Image (cartoon, rainbow, N blue to C red; front, side, top):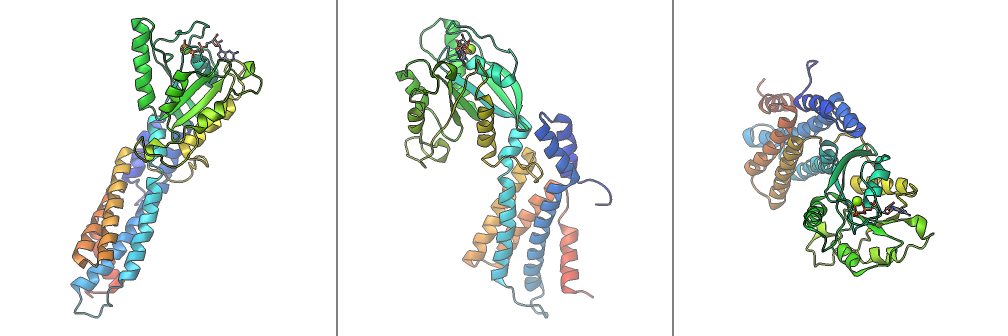
Amino acid sequence: LNGRIDLAQAESVAAIVAARSTGALRASVRQLEGGLSERLRLARRELVGLLARIEATVDFSDEDVDELDWGSLAEGLGRVQETLLHLLGTAFVGRALEEGVWTAIVGKPNVGKSSLLNALLMRERAIVSEIPGTTRDTIEELLEIGGIPIRLADTAGLRVGGDRVEQLGVERSVRAMEQADLVLAVIDLSAPREEDESELLGAADADRWIIVGNKSDLVEGDTGGLEELAARVHRSRRSGESDAPGPARQCRVCTVSALAGEGIDDLRSHIQDLVTGGPGLHLEEPILASERQRVLVNEAVGSVSEAMAGVARGEGEELVCEDIRMAAQALGRITGEDLTPDLLDEIFTRFCLGK
Ligand SMILES: Nc1nc2c(ncn2[C@@H]2O[C@H](COP(=O)(O)OP(=O)(O)OP(=O)(O)O)[C@@H](O)[C@H]2O)c(=O)[nH]1
Ligand SMILES: [Mg+2]
């Protein structure tokens, strides 16, 4: 664009400065190169083209212009929608890169939560001791897994009783657990399974929990019914009411020894899988990196849906046009382009009117 950068690219400059991880940095550099802008411009151009086609049949219906082909209009809208929904699918990763993934390590006292934090950080950050109730306040650290910034919080062990300070710590743990994007629920494999553990896992959500069986070095392969425990966590809370059965999805399970550092790499890949939704981050692909972009693409998706519904219902051209125009405007605002000039261009060059 006249050798200048557009708004989305300008935004990426700020993101490069603020990048919290190599992944965020790579994604921002890609955006500066214009990958996202290009994709948005293509989608917007397609919308403007559709708009031009409709408007031509409306405005110049007395002249020699073909009848509007509603079928191909619906097809075009469908294509744009697919592109936009694909972009919207990157919103979670974009947010994770921008803000980090809030991750809480929870579990009963003495199961090795602080040891796990240290093992993941590869340094002795939190105090570890054989005395239950060692961690009383939440400790937060930033680490990076597969290019994604992870904000890891070690919490006070969950138990009733204890003194007032410990109870305040427990309250924070519960809050951290509820608000976290990701929960690492730690269980001591060498201790007998207990009732309050099932209670903890009763709150589990297979979409964002990983059950971590720790102290594997003490049990030599005997996972003490861990899989059985996990199998009971079927529910996916995001996808419906907490009482509804939801799709049967087993919670991820991982056995580690925080002390010996065994299984930690495995846990890392579980975390990466869960955050990126499986196949890993494709940071070479354009992603929606800022909240502004996510909101505007979401708006565009809404307007395109409206337009598609309008076409399906056989609504008038005017209403469909209005929805398409709104979608194009939302996309234009991401890159900072204005709608009117090239809309007119489209109409006059494609239909050779007004000569
Ligand atoms: N054998 C063995 N011991 C471990 C392992 N992980 C932790 N421990 C020991 O378990 C005890 C408790 O570890 P912490 O990491 O302090 O446990 P915590 O869950 O943070 O405990 P609180 O802060 O009291 O809730 C310590 O004595 C650790 O050395 C492990 O993988 N294997
Ligand atoms: Mg601790």
